[in-house]
Length: 275
Ligand code: PAF
Image 1 (cartoon, helix red, strand yellow):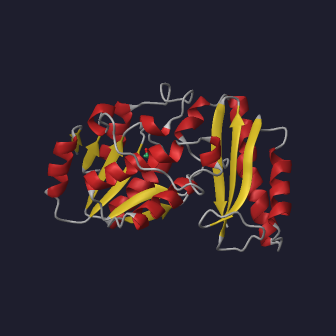
Image 2 (cartoon, helix red, strand yellow):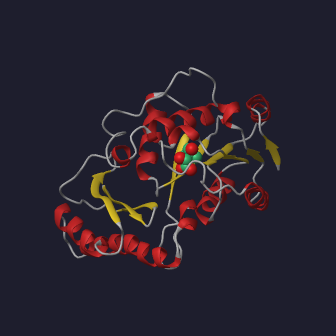
């Protein structure tokens, strides 16, 4: 596995790859969720590039940029064992210059839900994903459904900017108890982790209601709130949207996403169910 830290070297190495290329962008602290993306990229492409970059522009003032888990050595080993061909680990200075042209998230879809809780977050995500896609020019890039709004916005950016990469949505990976894997789960104390399970339970409850024929989003969201109440410390939102992130009143299977964002202790967690 080749490790590259400079953009010029990445471009030259990528340009020498003649076969198909799969790309998995990450912020490191790799877990089974990332590994599932890497494995899928490995299966579907001749070459696999992974990036590890804790992107400063997607963190808001006061968020956990400084304390975001960094595990360079372990991540390197994980990538090596997973058969990654090229690991890109740039510094912020390699990625960003002064007075840059900025990409902005769409005014509606980029500023509701996650975008309302974290205004500007998706500008930073799209800015760095655009740079990474241009640097790696992958045939396919792999994104988890757990960051549903990010996934939908990246798909939109690829369409709007006529990028050649196919975005591959990948299933959410959960611990056996249901907690969706996230690099931020390491912040949870044992009690917080137990209470955080209400998040996946609320989605499971929603799934059962939908299976039994309930279609009104308000009834389903109410039932989710009922499961979450008294367990999470702050419920930021529960929401039902369609696959384009427009709020829906009726849940049509195959067309909707149910979303939760909540704080447990000081840790902010998100999860969702693609109905
Ligand atoms: O999902 C993430 O880990 C990040 O938002 C991404 C896509 C690597 C961009 O920094």
